[in-house]
Image 1: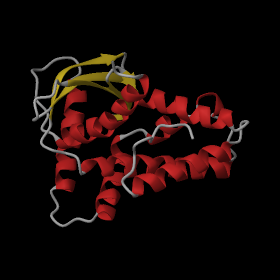
Image 2: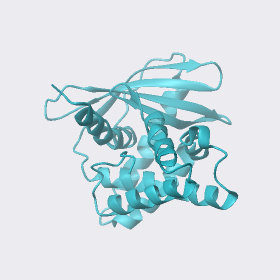
Image 3: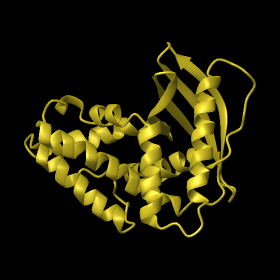
Image 4: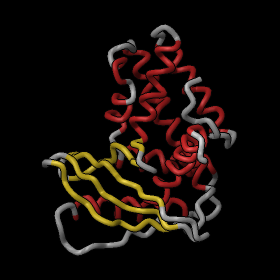
Length: 222
């Protein structure tokens, strides 16, 4: 039987892999239908990411810099960071909020670039895409593994940004990851008597661990 802890860690192993595969894998094109604009967005991101990882001899620092730029352009970082604070959205001072936004970005970059080293020709296929009103879209896909492992379903929650889209959340193994991270962040603040500095310390700790390649408990609220 798979324990809750095992499933939790599995999701956070697959989360970086899911986003990396979406960025790195060739995306299957579908016939014209509602949501094709969202598919085109993912396809464009994947091509740009392939260019980043194809640079021979690039250092980890160089990859992080380029991945960070790609993240800035293709993910709605302000919305993700705000959502992750839940009921504590108005808790930080202006100075704390500024540092929080920087740490969240660095946290994501460090974790996902660390997982790039695990990429091994997995393939992501788009299954369908549908719009939610005129401001959002959900793209359904699955990761296919070269080692014969059962495919893993991945859904992409995109939000409109001007004439295009940006990534807001990713669903892996039935869990929306930004929502799960919000649970972690709010728990850290709550468990420390509402002290927002505790979350900043938590993020610094997780960034430090990711820098060494250790992301085994990346979502643990400690």
